Length: 271
Image (cartoon, rainbow, N blue to C red):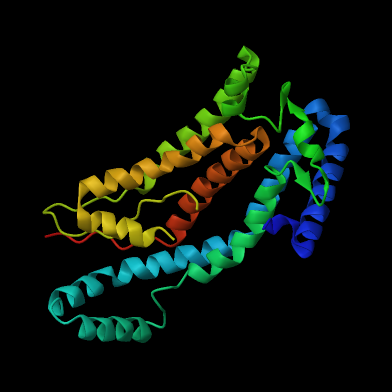
């Protein structure tokens, strides 16, 4: 079953598509043939701006998890042979702190359908039964509906197209590396468990980062590699979607850096 063909979702996509193309038409006198790509960037920025409250909720939840991490580690050590007692004490701790282990998850669930609809605009060849006009537009001569992998497979890749794809995909990879360096967990001196986080881009990863700290540097390196999955995905999706991914990961990095300053994590424990 095609979820995007479901009438309410198809109607929502069709409306979003109409707005996107109208925006491209407004930008065309100013930008010219790159107006469709500019509309993709602008719509992505508008959506990310609308989701700023979600980022605040996630940052506060991350700070709370960081603050509770030493207490949770103490409970795990104290009740390691009694799982039921550990579960009760853990839930009591969260209750006393006025939070839950799932704090920050609800905002992520709220943003998922919004992001899903926007992303669908950049990958679906047809919307509500008609061709996706966005993917017929070009960016520096490269169709927004084409992908790097697709052009390589069909033998139609030109040097200019390779340059366009290369800049976008390399940009995503650079942002991924910056994200890895800025947010990688920093184990404290003496080998005690730290409470940092490795951001897995975008797409609910604080627990994974904590697991990386507990599991050691091998797991941390594996999570660091996740930063570059978005760049790999960009090789196979239409150029419009790759532009969306580039803007999204760049916005996410800057937003998280600013929110980390406002909601700093607890310093790692030392031995």
